[in-house]
Amino acid sequence: MPSTEDTRRHFETLREQALGLRRQGLSRRRIRDRLRIGNNDLLNRLLAGEPAPEWTSKPNAKDELRARARELRTQGWTYDRIQAELGCSKSSVSLWVRDLPKPEPRYTREEQLELMREGLHFHREAQDRIRRETKREAEQSVGRLTDRELFLAGVALYWAEGTKDKPHARRETVAFINSDPGVILTFLAWLDLMKVDRRRIRYSVMIHETADVSGAEDYWAGLVGAPATFNKTVLKKHNPKTKRKNTGEEYRGCLVIKVLQSAELYRRIEGAWCGIVGAAHRSTDDMSV
View 1 (cartoon, helix red, strand yellow):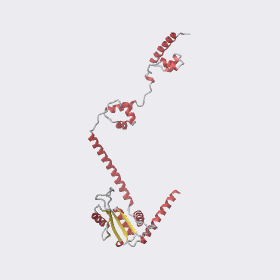
View 2 (spheres, rainbow, N blue to C red):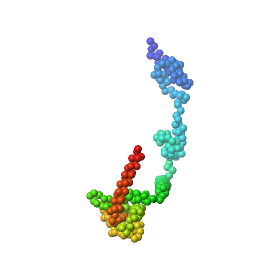
View 3 (spheres, rainbow, N blue to C red):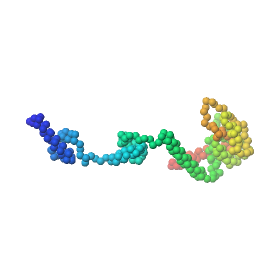
View 4 (cartoon, helix red, strand yellow):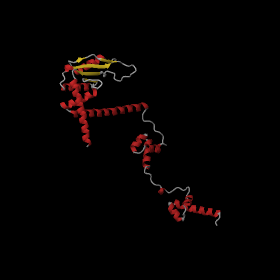
């Protein structure tokens, strides 16, 4: 049986041979076969501390990206710019260049704020152009309204903004209220289509008492045109605890339009609205078949 000293000398001899073969560029498998070593643990001990030959290192596909990222960072590029340029993740950029000194900012704080304001201005201008173009195209797509189309539009407008008859409050009268001048003019055109004599129409303004009441009255009177009969303006009491947003020169309150002797007209409106609802429901059913 070999002594401990013999075992140690044998191991050192074997290690010298293994290291020599490794430095010649041999793989672990070839060393193991050459020295007839069948135990990987022993091979690991023989080659301990000896680096693997360069040819055994697999090339890293990100080496070039890493080198380029470091180059750009030394030129003062930010993480975001490097990420956009190289198409890699921001975390990878941080890992590759975090040992490099942080570049000096290209702009002062004031200059950065100004650039941000300019960028926001151009962004909003672009959005406004898109909005205007979309609205213009939609407006032009309408073209001329037929009497039927105006009739249906007026019925829908009234059912959205007009007073309605209730079982607990019989109100078979046409009364319409809105603050949008376009809606008011469209409803008046609808009343003309329905052959409603303008002498049967009464107007009144509803507005907060703290607003420009006389200016609002003049505005609505000019919108509906003369001759027009206006009842007394209804003033809304201002609650000091409520912070109103409908203030300023553009706030003119609402215009109320009432049609005298309009029970029959109201019934026609309600009936036509029921017809629209039924037709829309049938159309939905047809599409689902």
